Amino acid sequence: MPFRRSFISILAAFAFLLSFVAPSLAQDGDGTPTDATGTLLITSAACAEGGDPGTVLFNLDAGIADGATCTPADISISIDGGEALGVSGSGVFSLDAGSHSLTDFETGQILAIEIAADAQTAVERVAFIAAPTEVPTETPVATETPTPIASPTPGQITITMHLCPPVIVNKDAFTALGGFEQQMAACPSILLPGNGPVPGTIGGAEASFDLQLATGSGDTAQTQNLAASTFSPGSRCETDAGFDLDNDGQLATCFDLSGYNLSYSALGSVVITLGPLPPDTRLGAAGFIPNSGDEQTLRRTTKEGIIELDTTGDDDVHLNVFLFSKAPTPTPAPPTATATATPTQTATPKPTQTVAPTFTPSPTPSPTPSPTQPSGGTGTMQAIALYCTADIGAARLTILPPGQEAGGADLGDSTCIGGNATFDLYKGGNFVASVSTGVPGVAFLSNLETGSYTVIDRKSGASGDATIAQGTITRSILLSFAATVGDAGSAGLVDDGTGGDNSGPTISVGGGLVNDGGSGAAGGAGGQGSASGAAALADDDSADTESVRALVAVGTGPARQSNDLALPLAGLMLILFLAGWKLARINRS
Image (cartoon, rainbow, N blue to C red):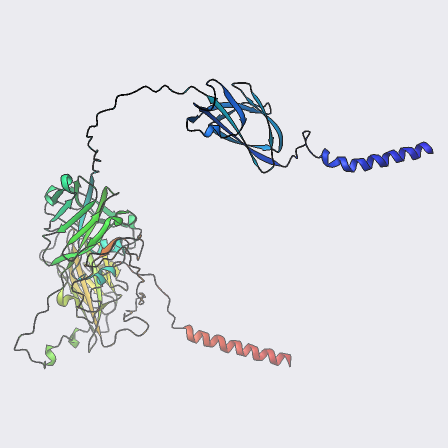
């Protein structure tokens, strides 16, 4: 029993002592906690001062390695007898807190260090070298060395000219077209005599024009015109734009973007002065292919026909120049004109122009062949629908000869606005195709075989004969007169009953509209309904506040459902809710 009690007493004492020793046993053998670390910074240098040449200092950092005669050096060390570690100038190592040893492989020196937790310990290894012997040199004779002049960077610019239809006379009509893709499709390219468009594309009509390109300054100054240019064929297709620009239900149409390439000696200021231009046209806008980055070069445009660019950083620019028709000069009334006009002198269409309501949408007319009917190839029809106010209802369909631009009375008066209409085309009594203009009032039907057609407005029945010629545009213009145009919810646009959207497209115009005072810049990115590609001019004829008779656009906006049933449905839902509430109260009672 006494032995047993003694043994128990020894165990109790051992347990008591163990409570004091246990924390120390939780540490490493050298007394450093395993979860605490510090940082070791080793600096290695070769110095010409501070010590005897050929000696090496390996110690805690004393700032010697930072001397003015010191340069970084490469060394090999080991930490705690481990593998060799290279240090080039300086090196940082993370070590457990506690005692460690460093070995310099070159000299065999061993340095004992202490790493403190969450602190940095700095060590320097300095090899002293002999100072370089200064060799006296002769003082060179000062000579004038010319400052080298950086060689100028050459660049090139390709200029494509576009001619917009006569209805595009100001920036409002132009921006209403949409973005660059729609503007390109509505305003085809024009080319100098002797140059042809890319085969199978729309555009490339022959015209006479020129320009002057002024670049550089001093030794790099250049002035060129189109006689010094190189013809550069090019095109842009609906597949590039991602839009059905001619409303034929396919992404198959391509538009000519051929232009004239001019090379110049120095990037920087580029000043383009247009002229001479086709008769009765002026500079309307400067545009760039979306996402090309070329729009960043535009600095300003002026109504005098000047385009200024800064091509610094862009050595290959493709500029699209859009020409507008000049606004017609009002003709003063003759002195003999009287203030009172007889009914036959008014512009109101005669009642005999109204088509009888017995028209059916499946006629089989017999078109009269054109005496100059072309053969072979394809052409394009442009359908234009304008709605105008008048005392009586009437419809008039005007079809112009191939290639003839619309103007004057063809486009009605200042009350006319674009709207939706559907045209059916027949050839030899057989149906060929249909085209709807959409809300903007304009659409293209391309790849039509050349020959004679009959065009019929599906709603009014107004009809006319059309001739499609190779590579040209034939314009069909519908003027619909009505005593009342639209209502408060249709923004003045008439729905012709064919399901077109009468709300109008939402168009976001960006791309740097500039004024004619010389300020403005381009910008923005392109997309449907975004004018990121073109920068239109402010007009010098902005005083003519005609309505949107000039809104020739390409493409239609997305269809939007009508809200005509919203209020009746809301009323019906309220009645059903009240009836249900009443039945519920009766059931509870």
